[in-house]
Image (cartoon, rainbow, N blue to C red; front, side, top):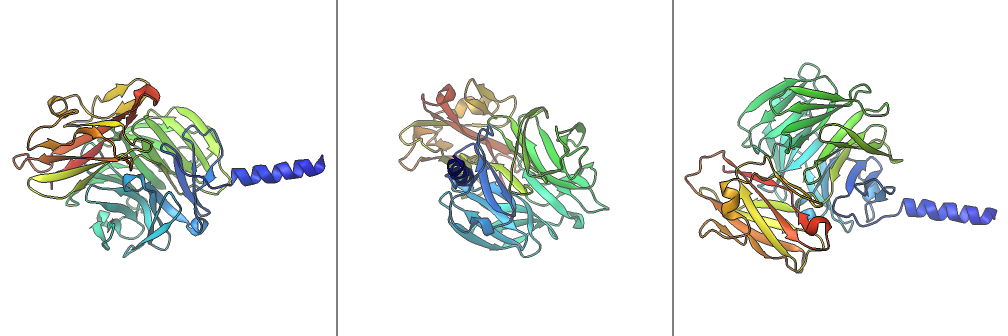
Length: 401
C-alpha cells in the first residue's frame, strides 16, 4: 500500500507539472520559472508551456502573438522573445535601452513596450527598437491600448511622477489622466465599460479602476492579503484577470466583483494574458487611402463560414447569448458592411475559413476620412457545435495615420 501511495504521488506530481498545448481562452502567465497556462475557469492546475528551454525564460511581461501563434515577452536583460505553441523560442532581439515591463501590439505589426529606462519603446517584428515616447522621463511599468481611440495608456512608478497617462497613437502627444499612488505595476483597458484597471504593489488596494477621463471609480480589495503585479482583460467575456506577487491569479468581473482565484506554485506572476485573444488582427499595407488586411485566426474553424463587420464605435456592443460579446456599435457603418461587400470599400467580409483555420478580409479607409478617426472591426465564425453557435472575435481598431 505504501508503495502504491508513493507511485500515485509521483504520477500526480508529473501530471500537474506536465506540458500541454494551450487552448484559446486559457490564462497564460509568466514567472521567473517559465511560462504556464491554465483554463479560464481555473478548473485544473497550471500546465507548463510546451517545449524545452521555456523554464529558462524569466519573462517580465507577456502577450499573445499575432494570429495566436504563441506569445511574446521580454526578460530583465532587455531580450525579446516569441514562443510558439509548439515550444520553439524565437529571439526577436534586444531593446536598445532597459527592459520591457509591459507589452501590447499595434496594427503596424509592432510590439509597444513600457521600458524600465526609456518610457515607451517600439519593437518591430524584424526591425530594431526605438523610443516611441519618453513619457517625460518617468519610469513606466505597464502599457495597454485604448481600443476606442487607438491611443496608448501607461502607468508610471517614478517617485516624483506617479500617474496614469495616455500617448496618442502616433506618439506625438502625452496627456496625464490622473495622479495615482506609487507602486503601479500594470494596466489594462476594458473597452465595454471604457475604463482602465491598474494593479499596485499594495496589500490594501492591489487594484484600482479608473474611467478613461482619469476619475477613480473604485478600489478593489481582493479576498486575500496580496499585491497586484499585472492584469489582462478578455473583451469577449468581460472578465478581468489579475496576477499577484504572491503567485495567485484572480478572476473578476468588469466591475471588480470577485469570481474565483487560483494559487500557483511558480512564484510571483510577472505577466498575464488571455491566450488566443488575437482572433482578429489587422495588417496595414497602405496609406491615404489606408488599405487594411483583416486576418482571422480561429482554432478548429476550418471549413466554417465567417462574417466580418466594421463600426465607428464600440458601444453599446452586441451580446450573443451563450457565445459572449462583440464590442461593435450597431451603427450605419456596421449595417452597411456586416457579412457583405461594398465595392471599392470592403472585400472578403464573408467567406469560409481555410484549412489552416485562417481567413482574410480587406477594407479601405477613403482618403476623405479625417486622420485620427478610429475604425473598429470584428467578426465571428459560425459553428453550431460552439456555445451560442458562434466563435467570437476580439474587436480591433485602426486609426488612419
